[in-house]
Each structure stands twice: as C-alpha cells, then as structure tokens.
Image 1 (spheres, rainbow, N blue to C red):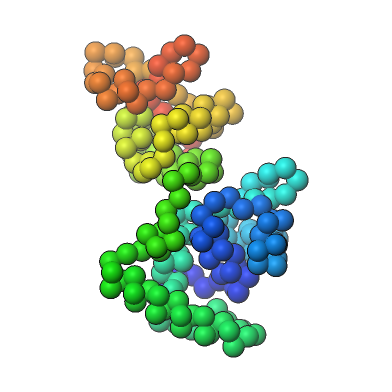
Image 2: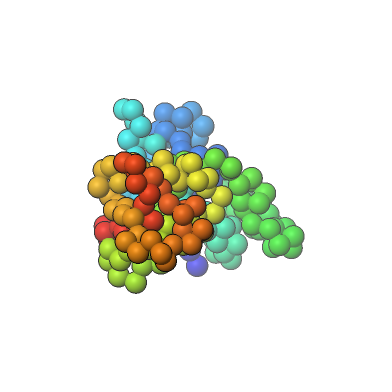
Length: 210
C-alpha cells in the first residue's frame, strides 16, 4: 500500500504528473484552485515525491520519479480513496483510475507512456537524477565516481542540459569535479563523458551526502 496522502496532496501529485513540468503556485491555483504550500508541501518534499524551489516570488513544484511511482501505485491499490472524502466524485474517480490502471497493465504500459514522457526535463529533475545516480554508484560519502558511469544512468537527459546543471552545482560547491590523474587509463568513452571547466577536462565527480 502507498503512503496515504490527503485530498489536496493527491490532487497536486496527479496534476504535476499530467503537466510533466515545473509548475509555480500561481499557475497551480489557476488549474486546480489551490496552491501547494505549508504542511502539504513540506510533507511531499519530505517523502521525496515533489521538489520545490523559489521561482521569482513564488514557489514552483516538480514531481519526482519517486512521485511518479507513487501515482502509479496509488491508482492500482485496492484501498479506498484518501480518508474523509467530502464529495461523491472522489470515490467515483478512484474507480475510473483503477479501471485505467487495469488497462495499462493489460497493455504493459505505465502512466508516463500514456501521459507522454516529456522530452525536456527541468533543471530540478536533472539535478535529482544526477544525485540519485551518484548515490547508486558511490560506495561511500564523497567517493569519486566516473562521469562516464554517471551519465549512463541519466535517461533521456541531454549532454548539454546535464553539463549546464553540473557546472552550476560545481559553481555553488554542491559537487566536486576533477580530472583523472592517470590519463593512460582513460578510454574514448571517458573522454566523451568529460566536462570542460576552466579549460580543463574533468572526468570524476564527488557529492557530499546532504
């Protein structure tokens, strides 16, 4: 069973899933009639379902891969809708979602296949993919990991977009990037995966656990 979320949180999750991009609070209010803030936002951020950042004067939110997985699991659970439903529409919509889930399973599809996997990932999504990939590759905190291995785990994120995010993370001190000291060990793939900063090719990355 998934973590049960409140009606507002659930609505926000599915809205962010369908839109498939970063959505600022003012736009969220226009679409569904409310903003994602206070305890609702904090809980979703804590679960790792949504990332939030300041965009101008308003908070903007992006569903994470973990959030997508929650939505997929939520529509397939044989459990009632979130507690204290105030509208008959809520349980009815869950019946529709469960029927939708059965169709997806029958066709061997998932939610992103039907809703459309967005070709353009947001900066926050790419940053999260980088950190998630690093955690999977690194055996310990701040262990050096080859960019060639990390890039292979970032899905459809483009090299240009990944480089932009890596340079920003390096500039702000959130990651460390260094060249491989033993150049003789570098393969063609290592050279292609390197990122050039300050006139020097960097092949290794390290991220301190947050």
